[in-house]
Image (cartoon, rainbow, N blue to C red):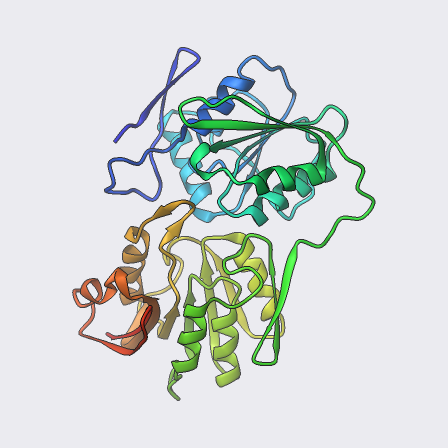
Length: 363
């Protein structure tokens, strides 16, 4: 696995977090390198970075004044890890994509897979922009969508594309347009007579995904399952369903994505719940939960990867009480049962259809 990046006659050591066994993956893309090359000679007082998942920009511009807009707990850990790996100071000014920013002079964006999240980034930048603001967006050409341009043109009058370099390109945005009223970047929808809201960029925009629907149609909460964890909780629909089945249940929601956690707060605002933005369960005590429910992800941006989920299953076993249950829904082709059989005493498929299966594991 490639871990040394050469830029401006310097070497930087960059590793992925979480670690992966896939040796074809590295902690930077050619899109990020193209951004670096474009701004190498620019003199700016402040840089705002968006979607710097592994800290390549935080490391290469560690002598500059940087504000990092973070969206994932794992992103913060990756940046910290790579700054330490290079013996750089680790004090970072962090903002979320819902925070107000100081004046944006130069913004760097690795365009995310979610077009909605891209728009959320651009609106946040636009609110703090002026005529001198420049936004440099990097992407790999195989993921290009004309929607990139349509979204950018809503906010900026000048939208230019660079030439391709090693299958990467840039969008350069200048001249913010006057926008009298910003739209609310949330989606609202109904399911079984209940209204739900979620911020742009959260999984399954505008509806409840079919896997979760299948899960909730068959999920039964036992009478003695009072302490419940919703793992990879997304917009909180599973946790809300649990509270509707048992109003006394104590629910903890864990998700790596801060916009997912903030969305779940919108949907469970009157419930007794604990919200945790983290990519691990390290904060949770051993033998402390009666039930863990989950629709775990296996897409990470444009990558398919179940390594993170398999690692979480090990922690689930740790935090479950004796005789506690893990109940999850997953795409059948992922074959989670094979892995879960190695951890749990009893594993069985409760329900299945052509695409999904609901798996129950008992400790």
